[in-house]
Length: 326
Image (cartoon, rainbow, N blue to C red; front, side):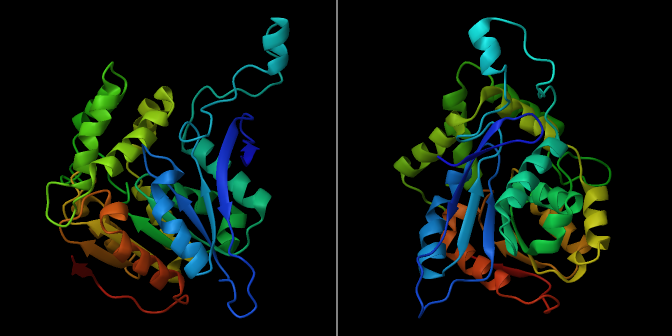
């Protein structure tokens, strides 16, 4: 199982890397696709994309598990030496006391740099979208090699309702989720919330029960502290950071596609996708009618086509104002 040690505190972090088979008559794509999962899932939320992207479309794919999710640890904990001897933890051993956006971007930057994957495109969902922006802003390596962004149901720039954005979720929404996922019936709570994530109540979003159970297991695999801590990290607005991104050299002409569900109640279109389009006017905004926050699954075929389209686009190519469709 491929893992690496976080430069922040030595936490063991897991990732998956796929590459297409060598075939002289079918060249490999020049970009690696870096998939960043949403909260509270793991990289396995993307599983259904990997075979077509790697085998049929010839992309390299990198899919890390964010710390605390999937097969990644939440923190490093005491050293093995101290556990065996019973002695105090070595004071030179870095410890994670407060995970922040900086922690997460340092983790991701370390992985991308260590693997030296070269030119790549971010494909991110939910909190993975601001993670991609903040990593771009903080890392010279990422700025030099990132060629495109695909943001699916992005948790930015407004995550909490305010005078600046009355369409954003109320603070009580995040409190409700955190309380439910930390309570004694967390598994049942997760199962109930998934139906809202995928909007299975609307036509075109039907999912088999066993598929929902698979995604429920992904949630239940998460570290309990990570489940509650992450909403505290991403609930602040990111207007200033997205403004810096919009003004940065290079991002100005970079292909960016925003895929947003028109029925997304977790992160409403008016608090996210449409605001992003105003701030980044060259970005493509594609609204999936009736889709919820989990459109990466309910509308997987269309999402796959959109991903392939945007990563093939050259810098500076024109975009459209907005596309709406089922």
